[in-house]
Image (cartoon, rainbow, N blue to C red; front, side):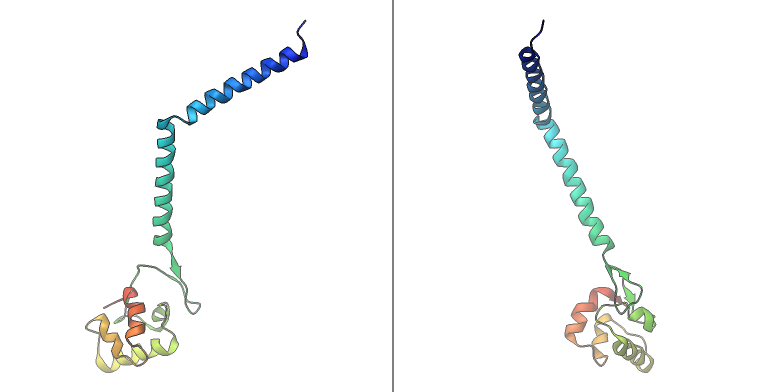
Length: 130
Protein backbone atom coordinates (compact mmCIF):
# COMPACT_ATOMS: atom_id res chain seq x y z
CA UNK A 1 0.00 0.00 0.00
CA UNK A 2 1.27 3.48 -0.92
CA UNK A 3 1.60 5.89 1.94
CA UNK A 4 0.43 9.52 1.83
CA UNK A 5 4.01 10.68 2.29
CA UNK A 6 5.13 8.80 -0.82
CA UNK A 7 2.34 10.34 -2.92
CA UNK A 8 3.22 13.77 -1.57
CA UNK A 9 6.90 13.28 -2.46
CA UNK A 10 5.96 12.04 -5.92
CA UNK A 11 3.82 15.13 -6.57
CA UNK A 12 6.62 17.42 -5.37
CA UNK A 13 9.10 15.69 -7.68
CA UNK A 14 6.75 16.01 -10.66
CA UNK A 15 6.07 19.68 -9.97
CA UNK A 16 9.77 20.39 -9.51
CA UNK A 17 10.57 18.66 -12.79
CA UNK A 18 7.86 20.60 -14.59
CA UNK A 19 9.15 23.86 -13.10
CA UNK A 20 12.71 23.11 -14.28
CA UNK A 21 11.49 22.26 -17.79
CA UNK A 22 9.40 25.44 -18.01
CA UNK A 23 12.27 27.53 -16.66
CA UNK A 24 14.64 26.12 -19.28
CA UNK A 25 12.15 26.74 -22.09
CA UNK A 26 11.43 30.34 -21.16
CA UNK A 27 14.97 31.26 -20.20
CA UNK A 28 16.53 30.09 -23.45
CA UNK A 29 18.07 32.96 -25.47
CA UNK A 30 16.00 32.17 -28.57
CA UNK A 31 12.68 32.51 -26.75
CA UNK A 32 13.87 35.58 -24.84
CA UNK A 33 15.06 37.31 -28.03
CA UNK A 34 11.80 36.53 -29.81
CA UNK A 35 9.71 37.95 -26.98
CA UNK A 36 12.00 41.00 -26.79
CA UNK A 37 11.69 41.61 -30.54
CA UNK A 38 7.91 41.25 -30.46
CA UNK A 39 7.69 43.66 -27.54
CA UNK A 40 9.96 46.14 -29.35
CA UNK A 41 7.82 45.94 -32.50
CA UNK A 42 4.65 46.49 -30.52
CA UNK A 43 6.15 49.47 -28.73
CA UNK A 44 7.30 51.01 -32.00
CA UNK A 45 3.93 50.42 -33.60
CA UNK A 46 2.12 52.02 -30.69
CA UNK A 47 4.44 55.03 -30.70
CA UNK A 48 3.93 55.60 -34.40
CA UNK A 49 0.20 55.07 -34.11
CA UNK A 50 -0.10 57.61 -31.30
CA UNK A 51 1.78 60.24 -33.25
CA UNK A 52 -0.22 59.50 -36.40
CA UNK A 53 -3.64 59.76 -34.78
CA UNK A 54 -3.11 62.57 -32.32
CA UNK A 55 -5.99 64.97 -32.79
CA UNK A 56 -6.43 68.59 -31.83
CA UNK A 57 -9.86 69.91 -31.02
CA UNK A 58 -10.17 73.67 -30.84
CA UNK A 59 -13.21 75.81 -30.22
CA UNK A 60 -15.49 72.77 -30.42
CA UNK A 61 -14.75 72.39 -34.14
CA UNK A 62 -14.06 69.13 -35.96
CA UNK A 63 -10.52 68.16 -34.95
CA UNK A 64 -7.80 67.88 -37.56
CA UNK A 65 -5.13 65.20 -37.57
CA UNK A 66 -1.71 66.38 -36.57
CA UNK A 67 0.35 66.70 -39.71
CA UNK A 68 -2.69 67.81 -41.75
CA UNK A 69 -2.24 71.34 -43.06
CA UNK A 70 -4.83 74.03 -43.69
CA UNK A 71 -4.47 76.10 -46.86
CA UNK A 72 -4.76 79.67 -45.58
CA UNK A 73 -5.62 80.94 -49.08
CA UNK A 74 -8.68 78.69 -49.40
CA UNK A 75 -9.86 78.04 -45.84
CA UNK A 76 -13.10 79.50 -44.59
CA UNK A 77 -13.69 80.66 -41.06
CA UNK A 78 -14.77 77.24 -39.75
CA UNK A 79 -11.68 75.55 -41.17
CA UNK A 80 -9.36 78.25 -39.82
CA UNK A 81 -10.90 77.74 -36.38
CA UNK A 82 -9.59 74.16 -36.35
CA UNK A 83 -6.03 75.53 -36.16
CA UNK A 84 -4.82 75.68 -32.58
CA UNK A 85 -4.21 79.29 -31.43
CA UNK A 86 -6.58 80.70 -34.08
CA UNK A 87 -9.80 81.96 -32.55
CA UNK A 88 -12.77 83.69 -34.10
CA UNK A 89 -11.16 87.14 -34.27
CA UNK A 90 -7.93 85.86 -35.83
CA UNK A 91 -9.85 83.73 -38.35
CA UNK A 92 -11.90 86.79 -39.37
CA UNK A 93 -8.72 88.88 -39.57
CA UNK A 94 -7.08 86.30 -41.87
CA UNK A 95 -10.09 86.34 -44.20
CA UNK A 96 -10.23 90.15 -44.15
CA UNK A 97 -6.49 90.39 -44.92
CA UNK A 98 -6.89 87.92 -47.78
CA UNK A 99 -9.80 89.93 -49.28
CA UNK A 100 -7.87 93.20 -49.06
CA UNK A 101 -4.44 91.93 -50.18
CA UNK A 102 -5.11 88.82 -52.24
CA UNK A 103 -3.75 85.36 -51.59
CA UNK A 104 -0.80 84.80 -49.29
CA UNK A 105 2.44 84.24 -51.23
CA UNK A 106 4.04 82.30 -48.37
CA UNK A 107 2.99 81.11 -44.94
CA UNK A 108 5.19 83.64 -43.14
CA UNK A 109 3.12 86.44 -44.73
CA UNK A 110 0.43 85.54 -42.19
CA UNK A 111 2.48 87.55 -39.67
CA UNK A 112 1.14 90.66 -41.45
CA UNK A 113 -2.38 89.84 -40.23
CA UNK A 114 -3.29 91.93 -37.18
CA UNK A 115 -3.11 89.77 -34.05
CA UNK A 116 -0.73 87.22 -35.54
CA UNK A 117 2.87 87.93 -34.69
CA UNK A 118 6.04 85.88 -34.59
CA UNK A 119 4.98 83.88 -31.50
CA UNK A 120 1.66 82.73 -32.98
CA UNK A 121 3.33 82.11 -36.35
CA UNK A 122 5.92 79.82 -34.75
CA UNK A 123 3.12 77.84 -33.11
CA UNK A 124 0.95 77.44 -36.24
CA UNK A 125 3.44 77.25 -39.10
CA UNK A 126 3.43 73.45 -39.05
CA UNK A 127 -0.35 73.41 -39.53
CA UNK A 128 -0.71 75.86 -42.44
CA UNK A 129 0.20 76.00 -46.10
CA UNK A 130 -0.42 78.20 -49.16
